[in-house]
Amino acid sequence: MSENEAEATDADDADAEGLQDGDFVELDYTLRTTDDDDVIDTTHESVAEEAGIADEENRDFTPRTIIVGDGHVFESVDESLRGSEVGDSDSVTVSPEEGFGDYDPEEVQTVSADKIPEDDRYPGATVQIDRQQGHIETIIGGRARVNFNHPLAGEELEYDYEIAAVVDDREQQAEGILGMHLQAVPDLWIETDEVDEEVTVEPDEDSETPEESLADGEAVDDEDAEPTTETQTVEKETLYIEATQQLTMNQQWMMGKTQIAQEITDKLGLDRVIVQEILDGGGMMGGMGGMMGGGMGGGDVEEALDDVDLDDVDLDADELAESLDE
Image (cartoon, rainbow, N blue to C red; front, side, top):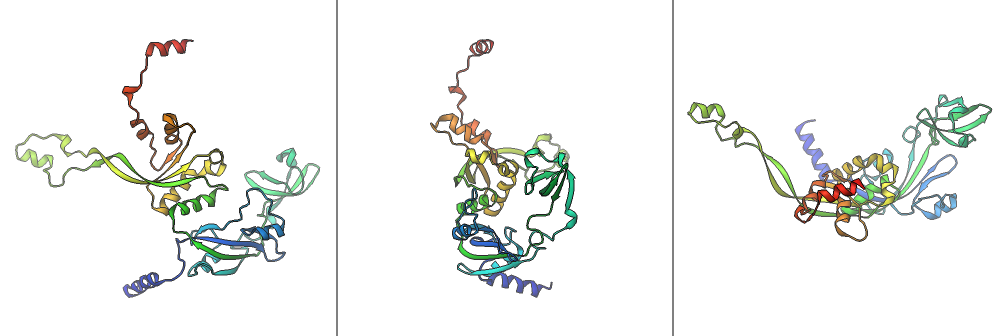
């Protein structure tokens, strides 16, 4: 690309109107198959009721927050969103290749029923076999016919959407990212904290090297040329997440919380994420429990310990030994 072409591209990006990659938006949508019009997912309660899926557990009928161009929707939907504005709507056809893949007959296999738990040995059951998920089509005697294709493999889909809002508030953006991973979003807030941290100070580039000092007949201290550390107070923009029982027991959170926290800090320009446990009654244990509940992107156990005045802690070794003997 020539310099003039690059400048023209930059100018086009600057003049681009409507939604662009990286924008947070709220979408109302319905996803259905085109062949039989089965509703797969929707944010409209009336559509869900008509389809008979309104009573499914954890179904949410509010607009979903997504990031344009981040793979949260099908690429053809992302393409439709670019340049759009709040209130715009569209109906996008999603091919099987872009959606859930073509149907592969070889993914339908006959396996021994012994590989399936007894409670799941019936047609329609979802099973996990050799780390592959599938559903049982038939089961006769000691053999089961299991389809390992995605349930929507080979289906052409229709994605109808309307842009409900652009999300600029960063706390709402954080809620949106968590909502992409979790069914229920815990309370969260953003604060700017002052934190003491050690920083490395490099030696002065203008100072003489040891060789130069020797040439001048001066005594040389090797430590003078080594980097040193010093404590500085810095500001860190922190997202606090309340560690509810529902959050800590969530399998997806337990497996992916580090990646989720990294995504939040990258997308929102934050310094760190701290998961804070709040215990009723307050006091030191409540504060310590919060800090030790899993500060990510900063790990602040040391800061919590720094707040403890050891002069106020009265430990009697003899009493402690006696209590342990008992």
